[in-house]
Amino acid sequence: MKTAISTTDAARNLGDYLARVRHTGARFVLMKNRTPVAELGPVPGGSVGTVADMWNAMREVGADDGFADDLARVNSADAVMENPWRS
Image (tube, rainbow, N blue to C red; front, side):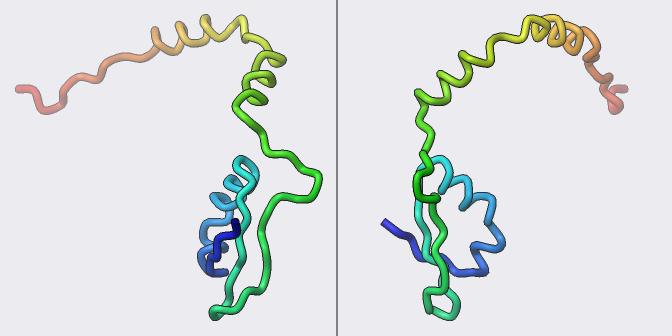
């Protein structure tokens, strides 16, 4: 199903609409003065990724062995600020 959106709304929120097209396959009809002027949707032959696709891609990337060390270093450098209003 296509959703009608104004060209102004499309211009202001293009990133959001592109994300919806990419991740859900959404289709939009762009309207200018209540007249349809363009369509925004997935390209023919393209695919919409699924959660399973995401998990498979994450498995292929593998774990970052140094991540735990990086996290520990950041946590040890993080100091609690003193209360500047304490009497």
